[in-house]
Length: 187
Image (tube, rainbow, N blue to C red; front, side):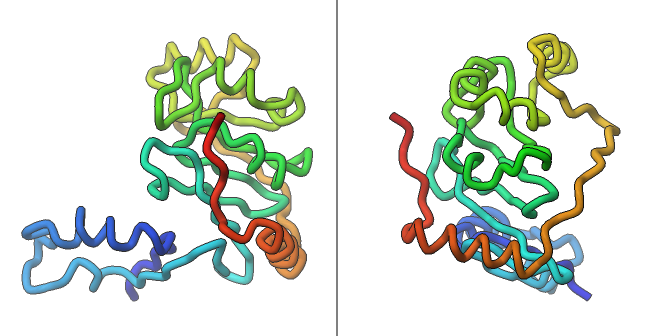
């Protein structure tokens, strides 16, 4: 059975152009790149094994090229992003981990420590587990600044997610208040 790929619909042409159209991408030959996958384009979310997962755009240097993922009640994963406090505020529940991109220094695609400390509340920072830092030394510096830092080999116990119907209803309610599905540009 092909591997399921849940891909934001806006990324499908990008994947086709950068990966699938690349010459000889399939080593076996005489096969299409997509033959190995079951592509499931998504917009605001998707169902997987009876659970509703929210998908949301984040702030990356090229709009529409990076997305976050949330299983309400269990975790939020930011993906590559600049700070997104309004998105975090929409999903944070005070108990689930907020797994957030962070290094010592930010850039147009990624959050830096000063950005994180400036843009998020103390409560949201308490819930965060940061990843995507450049080196173990940078991870240690982030930990010294009081952040929880993900390390290779760590396992993260997750709280029980919300019931599927409740999560889907919360997502639909949020979507009704944000008709474009886009987050505003930073000031």
